[in-house]
Structures are given as C-alpha cells and as structure tokens.
Amino acid sequence: MTPEDVLFRQATRADLPSIVRMLADDELGSQREQVENPLPASYYSAFEQINKDPNHELIVGERNGEVIGTLHLMFLPSVSFQGGLRAQVESVRVDKRLHGQGIGSEMMKWVMERARQRGAHVVQLTTHKSRVDAHRFYERLGFIGSHLGMKISLK
Amino acid sequence: MTPEDVLFRQATRADLPSIVRMLADDELGSQREQVENPLPASYYSAFEQINKDPNHELIVGERNGEVIGTLHLMFLPSVSFQGGLRAQVESVRVDKRLHGQGIGSEMMKWVMERARQRGAHVVQLTTHKSRVDAHRFYERLGFIGSHLGMKISLK
Image 1 (tube, helix red, strand yellow):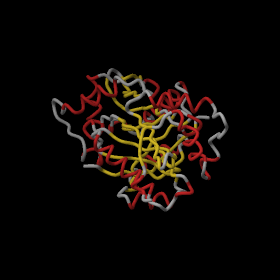
Image 2 (image 1 turned 135 degrees about the vertical axis):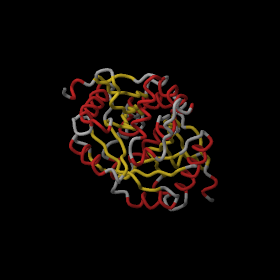
Image 3 (image 1 turned 135 degrees about the horizontal axis):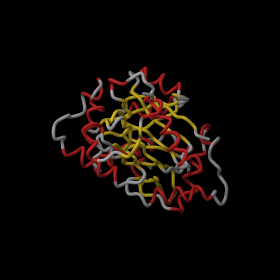
Image 4 (image 1 turned 90 degrees about the vertical axis):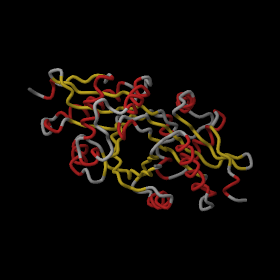
C-alpha cells in the first residue's frame, strides 16, 4: 500500500476522537490535550466554529476507512503583499504507527495544491524549535525557515 | 504627548492608503507592496474580506486625527489546546517617524487586552529572522520565541 491510497477529506464531528488522539500523541501535545470518552465539550464547540467558516478546513487523511492523519488549513485574507491571501497550516499530525511511509509528504502536497486552488500566494506554518525532524521534513518540501515564531500565553 | 493619547479603532477603507504606506516603509515591505494613488484594487478587495469577517480586526492607531500605526488581529478557532481560541497578529507597523515613543508597546498591550476579552488563550505572531529589534521588542512584552516560522511561496 502506498501513500497515494490516502484519501483527504473534510473532517466531521465523528472524526474528533481520532483527531484529538493524534494531537495528544507526542511530548508537547500530551501536556495540553484531554483525551477522554466522551471528549470535553470544548473540542466540539471549536469544531463547530471551524466547520461553519469557509476559510477554515479541518482535514483528515483516511486509509481503508481509518483516520491516519489530520491538519487544519486556514485561509487568511491580508492587506500585506498587495492584499494577498495567505494559507496557514496548524495541527499537522500523522498516526505515529505510520511515520516514515511518506504520508506526511502527501498531506503537505495536498495542502499546497489546495492553497493554489484557492489563490493563496504562500503557505505558512510554525513548528516548535524542538521539533528538528519536522524542520527537516518541511525543508525537503521547499519550506524556508525565515521567521521566528513568538507566542505569549494569556492564561 | 504620551503614547496613551493613541486611539485604537477598526480601520475603514479610507485608512488603506495610510496602512499600505506604513507596510511599504521598510526594507522587506518595500519589495512587496505597491504604493500608488489610487491603490491597486487588490488592496480594497482584501479589505472587504477582512472587514466582513468578525474573526478579523484590522486596526489603526490614531493620534490627533492622524493614522500612526496599524496591525491586523485575527482570531483562529482551533481543535488543539482543548479547542482553544488563538489570537494572531500580522502586519504590525508604527509610523517610522514615531519609533521609540512607546507606541508599538501600547499597540501590543491593546492586542493582548483585546485577545483576553475575546477568550483567546494565546497571542502568536511571526517576525522575520532579520528583524532583531522586533524580537527584542516582543520579548520585553513577554513573548517567547519558541517556534520556527516556515513559509513556501506559491508564486
């Protein structure tokens, strides 16, 4: 089975447990997610916000009926770059058991194609400085680490 | 006159020439903006997209009736962080003639207050690696440069 057999589609509410499981399944994610059955209601409220906004696409990758990857693609209108539309990706995950099979690359190629279709001039993302493998992964796809990503927690 | 005399408000179409002038007024911006009278229509289309979306706030800082700063604040629903709302800032500029007066700090404090009001758990931004003064500026406000910001141009 090849990565090309992965189907990408809009996530539904029923996909949320799989999505949250993948978000939680690494060192950083495990500290901030709450994997319970049922999931905390806050996940479902966020899903509704995302789902009703045409500038947001919560995507899953599916193979043999199983959700094996996820990403959140957003389209951000901007005044800068002569009013250019930006695409931004957040929350990219591939099921850990399937790392190294090229599924992440297929997902990101899908993202770039989708961003082109919608007229974005750039795809942007941030990745934690500690995720060195991720930096190399994105560089292989042509991304350039030109920026410093800064955050302040309000909690 | 102190920075506290700056009034922050939603930008109108009539503010666009001032906004674009400030975006263009530095080394990186001058390469990508087109400052003409009238402005290229693409700026106005982007403004309409931003203006009709309640998750986007294009803001100007005004002093004595003159626009002296701008920023684009956006609220991004997300599944991660237990469905936590993110605030993101792009296109932050203060009129170059007024640098060093604390106006940028006032703008960012306004952003953090606004983000709290709307329930965001984080404010995030990226800044070009070459903008070392900006990194220090944001660090003084409490931002942490924890991420690498990566981009790929689709043009």
